[in-house]
Image (cartoon, rainbow over all chains, first blue to last red; front, side, top):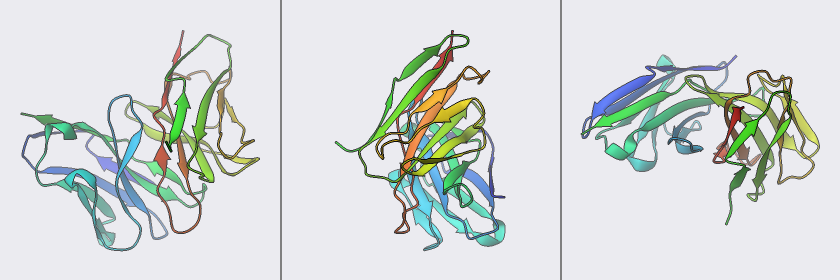
Length: 114
Length: 114
């Protein structure tokens, strides 16, 4: 069965600092992996996705993630945090046994201080 | 204007009452999904549908029902059998085929129990 683990339910950084949100996955087949962002009381917005092409994936708002098969990881990074990055972030893997629904991690809340 | 509409934004349920959450899309996507979001739990799959007049249970289908009579619509009914319905409900859609794996999310409905 596929699964996703997000390490750290809450991450705090200063404005301008590096953002690193960790995601590890478990999958018996080549995975499709996603990072979504959610602002309070809103739906989810896709940040980026890995679909077996380039292992370094660039997304919106300056975020990127690197797929590392040997480490079963897909960590999300951004070189310089902005106040507007404060939100909840979800890592997800595509579930081939459920109509390619998504299996989500429990989320990481990012706080950015000035 | 293309997109996914969920209504109402807030919904209140009394004890023993069935309530229906609406999800409508004009993206011409084949697949539709319902997820439940609880704080610190990520999103969990309730039901999904890949074609009109067909749908499948997800991980937490007990106490919920759905229908898919039209491609554009996938309403979710929260029945009185669901003893803990307070949550944020998100509808998502996805085109099938062509290697397109991205799910698109609606703005969500927050269900509260009176």
